[in-house]
Length: 355
Image (tube, rainbow, N blue to C red):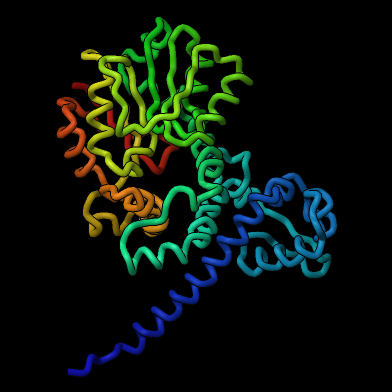
């Protein structure tokens, strides 16, 4: 039986594909603008020539001119053809510059280039199984540190920690705190600086991330912060901490059930575990209207799921969702779980857990 084609639908979908191709390359060139500081430079300039913009950013004019042409036809910057001058509107700068903090979506485009760098290995994994190892993502830690750092700086102390009733007073009085899967340790260092009476431990299996955490602690003079290279699935610290955090790290774990069980074991009986992880539904059909669903499912395929599978792991994926998260938290032994949101963080749900 021959399937009949709806030509109007076919043409509409072809148009969508053109948009996808244009959008993909715009994303890559936006990443270049972020990394070279072009958006930050343009945000401080009036309408300027390519030479003036290149000079302000300390870059080669010919490359900047071609980049500006892409930005112009992509309707990201405005162009005055008579004066040959380019301008970044303030309304666009609000989503493209480092001054935007967590609203800086240009920083997110770096992950598209990262995914492209491992495409050959990913295609091989599609054919043979297994996954792409962490070692293939050379820039992942600094990129994540940059993006999560913007969110931590804007929300951690003023919005996230106050979600846990009484926690700020406990931190001021002095308690033991751990961040498991701490990455580059910025969250630990922010808390350690703010609450000098408490003691903070960052745990991660990345030597690069732990080194960055220690260096920042030294720079800030955080004598109450320490960092350990450790596999969270093997952590054995019974009743060691009053407060434990994980920030967008559980879904990456090869063995998330073991990690959550170890978190529960390490938490003192009256302690609190704050799990911050991607806000989503566990069923794909319920994520159709999620504003970042394609991005997050793609990131999952090209990083979060595959690095877990590379270690013979469960491969939860970025979009494991609230239902699955609650299932695993209950299995780990948490009897009380409240799910909260933080204004300014469009990515995450905040699970406040007690045994």
